[in-house]
Length: 201
Image 1 (cartoon, one colour):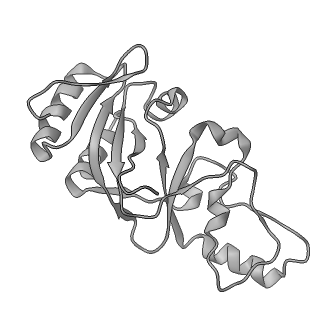
Image 2 (image 1 turned 135 degrees about the vertical axis):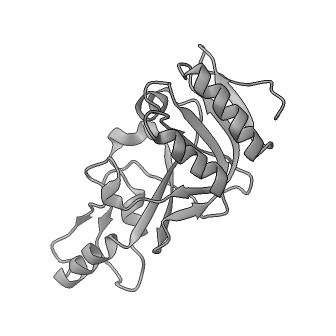
């Protein structure tokens, strides 16, 4: 993890989602979900050989629920992520920095545990996914904690190609007053993100 690296969170603005955006901006935080709250039905699954003791399998099953995951993207121009996670380019992408440990996901299939030490953590299970998810190019923050939020610094907000113009103006005005250092960008028809000239930039 590079100190000044920017990671990205793709967000919808439909329904009540814009309120969650304001929570992110006001409180400088992102929600960390449990593995079974994520959209991959194979999340938290792993492979093991028959000689893996049953008591260790029980341990893993009991421990998995104690972990929380924050999923981040490594790029802000991923067309499939825009389509899937911003309601078809009507949402936004949040560019952020964090002091948390961020680890890349490997798309080499479910992780295989052959010789498991019950004293070590099990985060490796959450860092391996099926190849079908490779397009997401995901990185993750994984924490074994009761705290459901991580601290972040929001540095930019990118509006999708089909974002509602009235909502965009409202968000630029309100968020710009909360944090005048945030850079606002607009996605164009070439799927490039262009800085929006405004008083807050």
